[in-house]
Image (cartoon, rainbow, N blue to C red; front, side, top):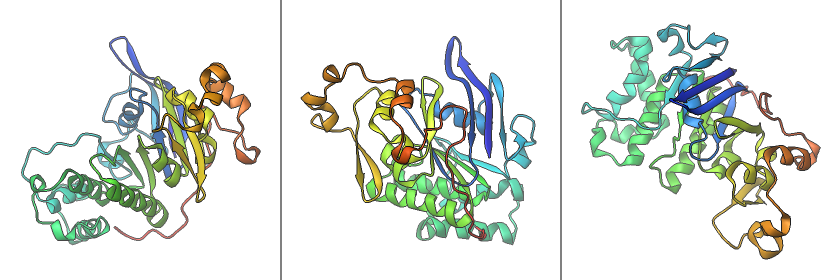
Length: 307
């Protein structure tokens, strides 16, 4: 489990993460959603110790992030940042091998090389393993970075906008792969997503952030609701059930929530998060789990093959 208590980060007088206390369940896929500037990436960076926290504490599997030695933490927690820049001219294989550094210290063993081959195969990168990164498309490079993170073979994997630069096909493939990674390898996957429909279709647990705080959290069925999403994003979002998934529609000005009979003027002001909490129970009468409470999660129980 990942836990934070009172986690806070500010730049000058601007607070970007404001006293966040939450529990991210072990196992499965947790997606962090919310508008730009909500504090999603900053929260992930503090949990992974890429950014120092101003106040509060974070722990991963009981390890205090601030106090645990780097090599110990790197064997339990890996992260893919939003922006990744490599100055050296590396091949895909070289990059993926960096994931083994916490174990090999730059001197890979046959076991380390086996992990590299497995990660390349898992991301379907075998045919381009010896190509240089600057010869790849943005989407191919993104897959190579994800392979590097998986090659690190940690129980907890944090991914900040892993769908960057991916077209529709490869975005779907990436989400399917992350779902498999949680289910087949027993990993805990935590990712920041802007596409709420990917979060809805592939997540066990969703955390919605706004203005540096956790607005609400729970299962996709609990969070992907029009009133909840309107409170998070400040726009009308229609939600439809399609093939067992809750799909949010927000592209069209003619969506049901924007029709004249359902306009904001007719409804009155859009409900706040707390109003939605009181008036919009999730399907089946389940209660949305709000800030500071753990939502529904599913522990992966499949045996853990090596990667």
